[in-house]
Image (cartoon, rainbow, N blue to C red; front, side, top):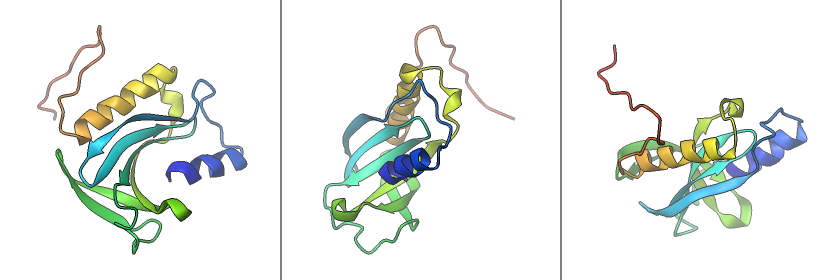
Length: 135
């Protein structure tokens, strides 16, 4: 989960995407805190850092945190970060080989943030936008 997941993956020698580095993307005010994404060679997660560090003080690692955002209700997971308090996270991708480079991963992070924040997502230029309904 978030920062600890990076350390665990690196220690156990998990294969990550060598084209990626650990990077925070797009943190902005949203709901009860700041919403952004963590891009790493091993995973991509949306993370909500609460403005009040004691907001989820009673939550244990892995506890579900159903939170209301502009896009609706989402099920985050609690991640205790020691002195930093507890943050909320949603895993977005665990196979980072899907991304060709850092810009590709950043774009996926921004699309996820647009969706969670209730903003219309923008497709990259030259990329067709597919419309439903889906079977």
